[in-house]
Image (tube, rainbow, N blue to C red; front, side):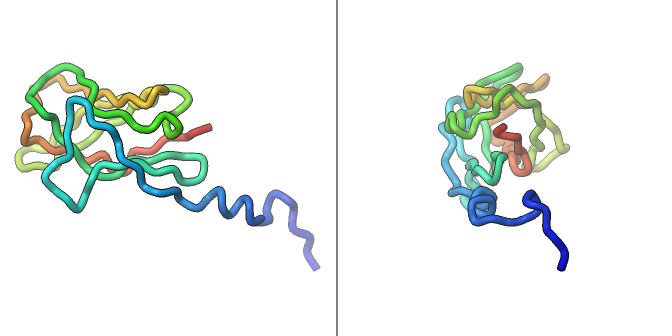
Length: 130
């Protein structure tokens, strides 16, 4: 009979810690939910990480940087993390930069003007919570 190291055992506590939590809403600032109702922008804790899913678009055209939305503070990273999001509307694919800060503020950066019909996909953006 082989002995299984304690760290390799899946205890009930360890299993429950890995079960994804409920999807939670973000609080929009200068951005808004895009027109695709099947892909709302939301955030979820899973294990020791949090992740965004869905899309959004600016409420007004702008260039430079802008606070887009905030996530619940208990899902914010310990320090700021940098990502990019892809435009999913027609035309040439473009990217914007974004920072998820330790306060939960999500700021979007662009060197070109972003219009109100430009939707961006925030899926697959995730960060550690520890």
